[in-house]
Length: 382
Ligand SMILES: Cc1cc2nc3c(=O)[nH]c(=O)nc-3n(C[C@H](O)[C@H](O)[C@H](O)COP(=O)(O)OP(=O)(O)OC[C@H]3O[C@@H](n4cnc5c(N)ncnc54)[C@H](O)[C@@H]3O)c2cc1C
Image 1 (cartoon, rainbow, N blue to C red):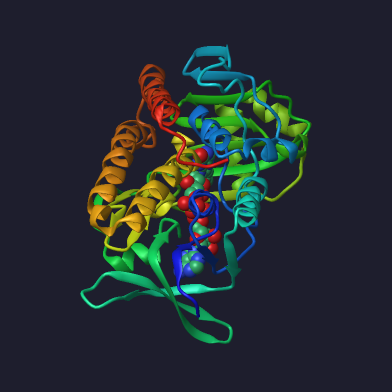
Image 2 (cartoon, rainbow, N blue to C red; image 1 turned 90 degrees about the vertical axis):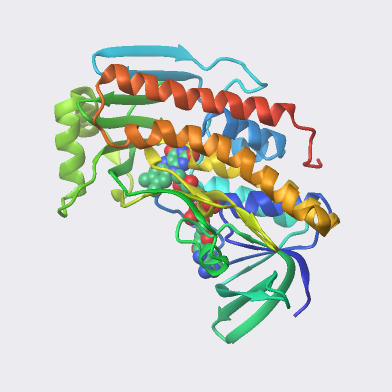
């Protein structure tokens, strides 16, 4: 098999966005996934302002909007007995939020990456990394229906999610870990009206509405980790009846269009994102509790930072250590601030005032992300 400049493992938001940036910078990029093209996955999908800015910078926001993703112009927040409503301000060139289904976002990113020249092969499960003499990572081994094969590449990017095989293979040091504390149940409904993001933090629960494609509203309930198996529908309805009776009533008169989705067991996990011949991006490098609604935004931000570090390493390997240290430092600055707010928020021990403060901290990270992105020269080529 031919050798590539870069092989990216994982073809969802982090992998597709990183591959896109690298292909536009002129590199020969292969992206592999054990499944694909991207189907739905367990994740709600509210984008923060900086996530929207990343899509705009990569020139893919229009494609996401053209796929029928509604603009979100209003945010309603409830902290205990306090409700705050505000319009989405026009800042950093972003005047609306979006919450595209992952079937839309991941597919658009992969399509655009392939249009930029990325080769995508699905059905390849990466089993290990290849190493050159001296130990430098030099590609991946894959298992296919036909047997095992080697793919050689000058750089390997692990965008293969929280349980990253690449992270394990390169023994990426763990910089932070805390156990899961949150569980989330959600589904999609036709006929629930919402003026925008509606996020509520009250009575040790986090519930809310996210408008998305096809005129549907995603309704979610988050709370302390469920130890015993529970019926998702009963959990959602009884929680809403207790903390948000208006949403329970709305569910009664709406049509649920899909099954209930449930996630528990998402840890907070920060790994060193780069070494000799390898990098990690997206959840593979930094997973945070979904209560922050920030993982996709992280992935899009880091796709740009990671692609730049990989590009510098390809141009001149003498600068690889410096480029990857700079990626680590920038990524960690945001990740550590997010962890400081997300970990206590996901423990559900707050009152309304504390939840409000923690959410404001997460908002400040998003503003800092916008400042970084908008202030960067466009590594991304049109
Ligand atoms: C319940 C829940 C709600 C969430 N809500 C939000 C939200 O509202 N907003 C937000 O921004 N974020 C949210 N997140 C976080 C978000 O889902 C993640 O941050 C995001 O999915 C990370 O994308 P990724 O591309 O890094 O990894 P993934 O989406 O995990 O993709 C990894 C890919 O790698 C492939 N892969 C894995 N191993 C291999 C292998 N060995 N060989 C080949 N391929 C492999 C997989 O098949 C997969 O396609 C939520 C998460 C959860 C669980």
